[in-house]
Amino acid sequence: MPRPHLRHNSGDMGKHIVILGGGTAGTMTANRLRRTYDERDFRITVVDQDDDHLYQPGLLFVPFGLAQPHHLVRSRPRQLHGGIDYKQARIERADLDARTVHLAGGIRLTYDVLVVATGAELLPEETEGLTGPGWGERVFTFYDLPGAVGLHHALERFEGGRIVIDVADLPVKCPVAPLEFAFLADWYFQRCGIRDQVQLTYATPLDGAFTKPVAAKTLGGLLADKGIELVTEFALGEVDAAGGRLVSYDEREVPFDLAVVVPLHGGAEYVGRSPGLGDELGFVPVDPHTLQHPDHPEVFAIGDAAGLQASKAGSVAHFEGEVLVHNIARFLAGQPLDASFDGHANCFVETGFHKALLIDFNYETEPLPGHFPGPVGLPLLKESHANHLGKLAFEWLYWHSLLPGREMPGIGSTMPEHGKRHSHA
Amino acid sequence: MPTATYDERAVPVDDEGFFTDPARWTEPMAEQIARESGIEALTDRHWTVIRFMREQYAAKGTGPTVRVLGKTSGVTVKELYQLFPKGPAKTAAKIAGIPKPRGCI
Image 1 (cartoon, rainbow over the protein chains, first blue to last red):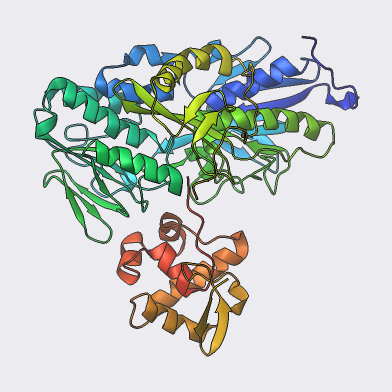
Image 2: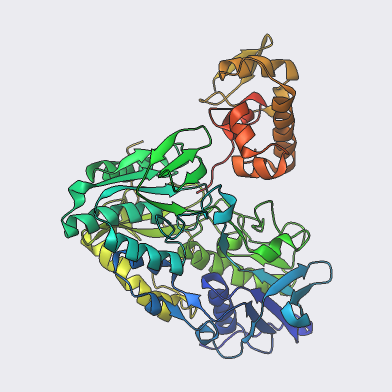
């Protein structure tokens, strides 16, 4: 496909787009920009601090021995198309007034457009007692690779008792993953033949199993069917590993022999060192429809790094990317931006026993039953083997289609209404 | 739309009792809303949080979450739960006469 050359502004020559973060959102953005626009239009530099691109959806499967840790990590720059520079360095800070990013080692990058795609970080040390004695022994997270591997060994050794899965507070990456962990734990211990000796509890700060009412009912029903106790409005205040209890801020307790905690999340550390860039939690507040920073029009954010009321999930980054790439070109050409991102998210929810359900939603429409992407398609909000196969196939699609910036045929950026059932309100 | 009567004035509220028009709120209304939320008397510390909620709403269009309150209001999360035991972000928003804070997904 011939790539359009931006002819409307000859001053584009030599413009520089700097993308901070070489994960899902940053890699997709860089590749989409390079596929769509000619190298004469602008240079692209991607920055990240290491060479480990982690397939994050795979973390869920590691504790159950369903994924091999080393298969989940690939080189960051190798996922980038030719014509994209990769700089491996720690990001010190962004100086938005000088349009300059400062990297470790005194490296400075000046930009015409800055894309913040540095995701979310785990902040386990912000919860009292979480990283104290017992962390990595009877208290784990599966949200990073060392934690997921440690938890795999702990589950292998586990002979019975109480397991609690707790979400400290929102926002978290992939808000369905902790539920999936609970469903898979039920399957795992049934397969081991000791399910009757394992008590599973799911504790959440929400007032139900999920944020949105229809999905909360379906997912809460699945927890009940599988004999997993649901504890709601549990705001985690303290982890007492020695005493084997989680304590909420309002002083309720959940006892455990093994705790699987999803820690607090925040934006990348340098965001806090970059005046004017982020919010109190280090996420970058951008317009929910254009992804542009309100005070600095040449700054955009995408994916988990963005402070939006959208899920922190790879699918959201994918759908945002379509709008973002378009808007960067429009911004550089001095044209009005396209305000068309609708908060679209699409997630497979693994439910155990080789089944999964699929949810599809946006800012306005909660996850509803029906079919995706149209009346003939995968069932929505309903367990099926087809959705499980979809979830497994996704890993291949991630490396070979999504990251390279190829569009998914038949699946556009905006949420499809066709196929959804609104009837049972 | 439902209404509630505070300080002898009818004000529009949502189904859960949150103000839909923060401009209709006055300070004398707060004590009564607090009692309905199970808080007998408002201390200076309560008022610190209530005023902070209103400032944040005016600046950002939504009330802060508990975590953001704990980081920015000068009141720790632990104390917030002592002041507003049934959930600080929601209860303080209700007493401060601002709409229900938007949750995260």
